[in-house]
Image (cartoon, rainbow, N blue to C red; front, side):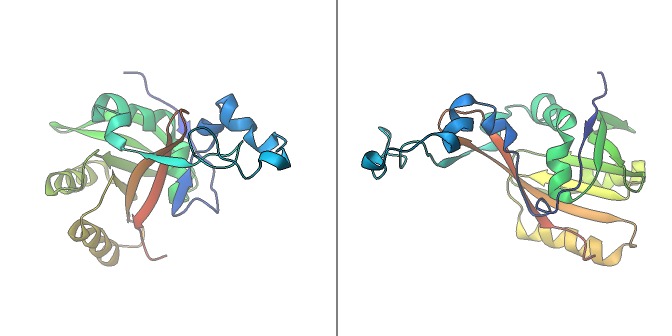
Length: 205
């Protein structure tokens, strides 16, 4: 496969929550709602779908599995080309360079670089609740790539797995960082989905 070149710039607003809004506003009907003039006589009325005052709408959650049906061929490749979304959530200047990187007889989802420190970043993702299998894979890949930043992405984290990442952050050296990131998606009306990332485990620095 051809390597991607996703990059990000640090955002002070993105450490714990990122709404990749440009995907939403790329749709004309969602971009111009803030510029429409509201008729005072109808301002209190709702749209035909009951979403709220005319010209406004609501965010609706979209299951991650519904967006990227196959983890390896869809979600992983999307992240490869959109590293800035994950980078903003983590507060990293992130470049992802390769998907399905071979580590012995296994395949790491994503590998790249923290451009601020020129250190290795690896990402393991899944589209279901965290499980022991992916935790083991994460540590196996870390052992084979010597990363400074290890990221685990999933729609929901079991408390035991979040606690495991916290333990690793407390008992490894300061140059090694573990992150747990919950992934979700939202849309406005019929717009394309936009990712919503929330960091649930991170180093104490």
